[in-house]
Length: 255
Image 1 (spheres, rainbow, N blue to C red):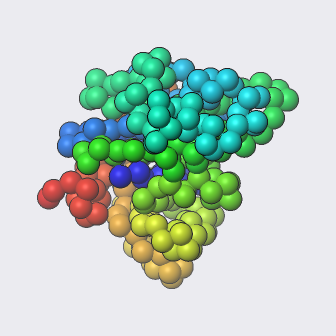
Image 2 (tube, helix red, strand yellow; image 1 turned 180 degrees about the horizontal axis):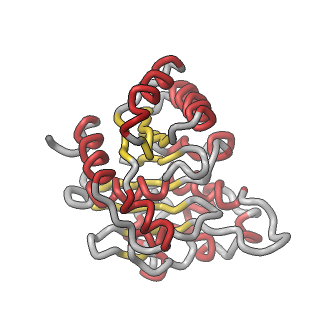
């Protein structure tokens, strides 16, 4: 199963990706694909060294612009019949102590180097042509906002897990993702993150009035906040318990 984790910037997409990965890695072969061209902290949150960006395997951004989908698939496979992440050279994969495997698409880092379009195109082709075993799950930590929707990156995914924070702006973006997910006939799951006890009713009412159905709330967790501030391996307690309950609710784990 391929699950894209989407949402407004700052909602906690990467933290949620790590928590979901930790829970699911106990039952599945788990890959995380980092397709956010801006944020560089996901490896730290997983407790791994950054892998070599996958775009480098294809010659870098400049050469990617000239490559077709068929060309990319051929380059990433021996027979051009589909892509298996396990076949990538080891330098392009980092593994956490829990066995979570991280792959990075690429990052924008230099003045004047151009837009992130080649990264989005590579992510789209990768997901569309990815072959998984029955016991494998891929989580895709996306860039902020909805540009990936316009680029069609979601074409190859099975479900869209949207994370919102308790703001009207974030919920409005979630509504867009919900609408587009329906058009694409993709599963849509919405969670609201960083929820404190004094606003639970307000958050649930706001989402309901906007026509949004949530699959769960994730409590504000001081452990998550502190580890994200320091920039270290993610620590979580209450939030991790909430994530586990949510994954049971959507039947990705038993409970």
